[in-house]
Image 1 (tube, helix red, strand yellow):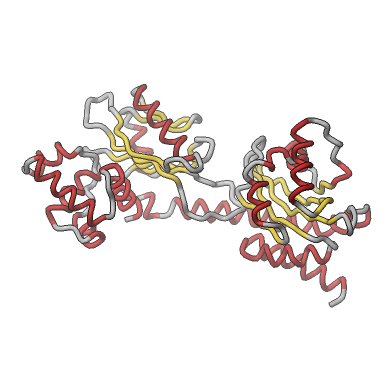
Image 2 (spheres, one colour):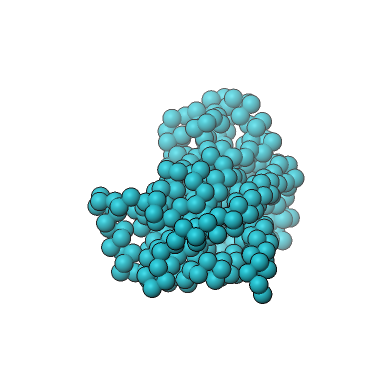
Length: 372
């Protein structure tokens, strides 16, 4: 294959990979060959000012070194800092970086020399939105040598197509993510569903959530995120949101929300969003909040719980009341059974659903509400 044919194939591959990120490893392999590089990465940077890669695809790097890099060293990487400071700079290479003398820079280079064989880097990036940067980084070893002006010039021609491909992929990825979360099954749900991003900003509310805020009964959505009218409840909600966002911590939790009207409290369920989204997307929900109103919540069909978990009719009726926000004693009174009987049924429900605590059970039931 001639150089011209390889270049055209490389350009075509950019557009394909921008629409299907599983193709990036093969694209990086070919791009490394074309540019005489020994390793390469495709990356998406998180919101400006935060050295974080929600997407990082690589070839020819040791996985342990990549893990160390993403878990801390990326914060010290002078190239990443330069990218954040210069989002409009299309191509970034070693010649643009100043020799840093601060401790963080020295720590990064010391780590790099110990763990990574490559020594030179050239990056082509696209500034897709105020909070999104993406691109590829090419790496060379000491033996191959630095990227010379002619290398940078040749890469510049490829980069024009890379930037255009990423821009197209970003628009389609954002649209696809919005469609994924605003589809009819979610918008028509009987529970209020709110999605927030990693900065607590609301990125989606379904119709029931919008109606809930309009009622003015203790729930408010603003630029600060979700807020509850009762101070102690709001503090607890913010803790649950932070826990859901913290890696390695609790994925969320269950709580109740007091209402100024004096009506029965809301049931509030907080959990991480685990669905896989397009790497190139402005719409990146991180946490899902489900708010149930026991006075308006359409009951979860008992038959669905019977079929899903093998519950008896009596157990399913108790489970539907718990999912709607009732506590165990209140559910027992509604079902006209003793509290002891309700506890016995709850233990049976635990066994059949594979849960151990009431909060864990309600999390599972509310998930069934949302996805059902």
